[in-house]
Image (cartoon, rainbow, N blue to C red; front, side, top):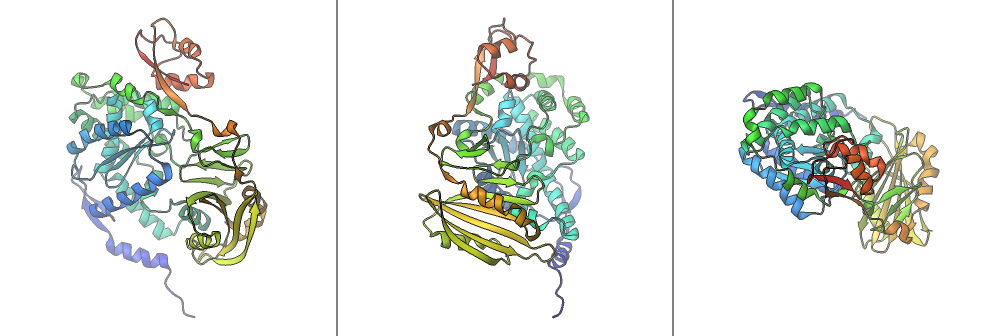
Length: 477
């Protein structure tokens, strides 16, 4: 048989022919771009769907409208006012804000709990508008395409798992791209400019940076990166922003009280109603199921799925749920279509803890990498089908298969009210009396002691400081 051109080589040739230069809307300079503005908007629209499905929007229409309102005050004043801007609040405690191509901008409820004024919110949204208007992510994606295609980087296991987990698309990869120092500096300057144009005082951006420095990156390895992991905060960024401020900025709006009223009662930390791990088990009160994840594996829970990664990163496990009236075998056939070049090795039907289940074992040959092996397990619980996908290389699979099957066999109904009736903690506002220190106020209000240092930062105070009488202070209960 004759040799065929490698797909990577063919794609590289196509991209090389497609490489073009575009004029940057902010600088007016010509730069590399593989993505047109029309393509950028389309990419953003598709990515927005994935982000909503994966991370979920925070269920507070009034808060969502408030955040969107602040963003839309600035959007018409940017260098690209014609883009279809969208501002959304994601339901995750991770402290983050980010933008994807085309004008789709997100803040998390975690970052909203950190801020203390509408001016801070405007500065953060303005910063993300800066990334969009200067096409930073588009340029970074263009560079990434050329590098990845040219070098064929990545591993079969990572790529296949990303595809199964729904994060293999080009647009969603922007969440994991680190901006350069120059990009961050430019986005900071644009954020100051856009906030000022919308009559917000850009000065509180400094306080936000200070809080970030004290908190550090709190993402803890979650699926969604923390703000500092994609927006590196060097000391000179604070110095640069400080140099951009003007005494006249102090006459512009800050709006502390208006902002704090909006975040009063916001969910704080993980929401147990979306599932939580405790004492070696995972519980989902809303869907009423539980299972035992592999010991010491990294577990990532989002509204759409539960991901589990082995400590050596040689195996991965994915749990998803979908409402379906299909038979388990019919549903499995549809699910298996995402595994290209699959070869069925075995299948069987079992009853697990009173629930019907169906299991398949596949080999998945790779063109230029070791063959993968996948175990797909499907369990019906009422109108829902729960899909477990276990993945490793054929050489490593035997080492993990007992753990894979043990997890599936541990899946069962959740009926214990102790685990079902968990409620999330909430950020609440109380008035200081002008006599108690912040530490004494926390103690008097029954705030858990391990939260005191973080809450002090989120209030912009030291624990030993005495908040002024009448000042609203954030607590958690």
